[in-house]
Image: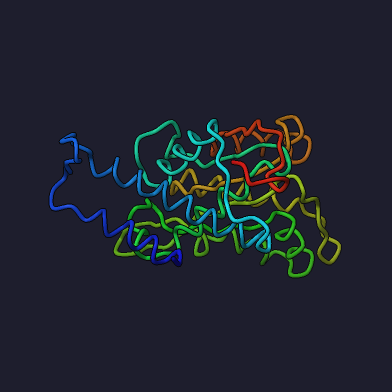
Length: 253
């Protein structure tokens, strides 16, 4: 069954007549609990499809280890606006070794957001993903417009019917970038982007997410203590400690 059909079927099951549903055992289950349960199934369905796609058909299942099931729950609650372990008013700084599944988590959630049937389950059904090294390369060829793409107010927020809606972004692999020159002007591109989006965070609660392999002291060295401090203020850290590479013998999260 195609993923759209899978998701559509899951969401059709979320159309109750009242705020509470009764299970076969007569236990009441809230709409939020049922929605979360359905979203976990959708997550797995999307993950399996992406796993097969990214492995050119060599792998058909996205493996979720028991210790990581809690992380998936926390992330889904966070993006759905449900009470949980993560602060909904701060972005995510996801840290872990190469291949531990950081980026894949965001790709799965972004893919889930594309389907109209489940968009209403997300607080903000929009997530852009940009590789830090690509952003810096773009600066080298296009100059400051490459920075404005991620920092200019009109590119970061939109006002609809008097309400401010933020455009959420995940910058992938913070630390793989370095300083770039454009017509002789050397710039720490990601430092400027973080600095600007920090101001948007303060003024309009614009959330920005990052993945990185760097430790705190390495971030200090790469971007300076001022930027490092702002990064900590606007983001909460999630550390993935599993050292297995998800590309070797199955996808792990």
